[in-house]
Image (tube, rainbow, N blue to C red; front, side):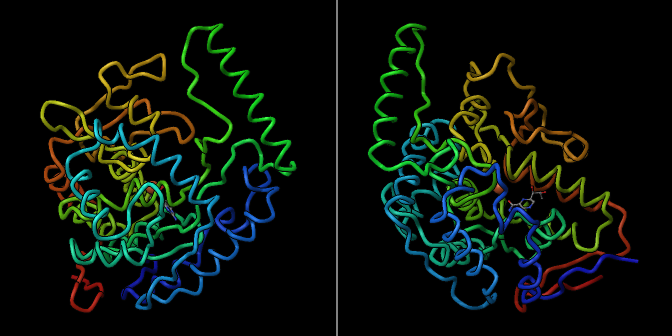
Length: 354
Ligand code: H2B
Ligand code: FE
């Protein structure tokens, strides 16, 4: 007995609709829970995703000024740090994406444009999804060189979605700023957190997907690497899916690779989090008491390495290169016990069983 899995890319339309609960309805502790406008926005984008058909254009979203401000705030925080700590493949793609698919500080790029660009670069594509999928469903998409990608942006405030009149809110910001300055002076340290900085997000959003993941998929080795995990997940046992999800976490989300004698980030969780990017890559590992443990990339080890989801990672895996990461992943997947080998036919977007 083998788990059902999609055989043709069109079947990902069914998979995309199997979001885990919180994907569509916000939980009561979500920062946007009390913000009716935000919830309506989320519902609208969930509908976009659910109605999407794989070979139709991805609907464009008219982002509001408020949403663009969130994007700019994250962009400003990340830009300089990415220059220092992102791997060169990321930086090269990012330059191209600024030219060809609308990446900029002041505007949010559209999934359709990114997808078209990735198709040209590495035959990878995006498809909208309303929220979190199970590991199995999510990884199955990668087998088809498809990345399930959310379209909404994180809520602009981490203080529980303000229902206050704007003027009162502004005064609170002013008071808060004065207060932080005072605290900063008193304790003689830099307080980098202000009320309007959307630093915290309980789920993936476009800041994470488009700033963290998308540029990496333009790299052939990385795209192949991701597909390798996806192919191994098709029809796999729950146990193996869990191992693959751990590998995914320690690479696609938090992977490091060696470049010019430095540890550079290729994982999207790092590339979209300024605090953790520095913690993982800077020589002095700022931001936590303990420096992280850095292990050489070995899928066999990563597959069993537990990880926290709400704090910085205590363990990172360092690859020699993206090419080497892919080779090791391939070897690992070949060693998994399976009744068949799944091959992807890019001509007709289907899976061939051997
Ligand atoms: N679902 C969605 N929509 N986006 C993700 O990035 C994601 C997911 N990641 N489901 C998966 C789970 C990942 O954490 C691994 C494979 O479990
Ligand atoms: Fe992610």
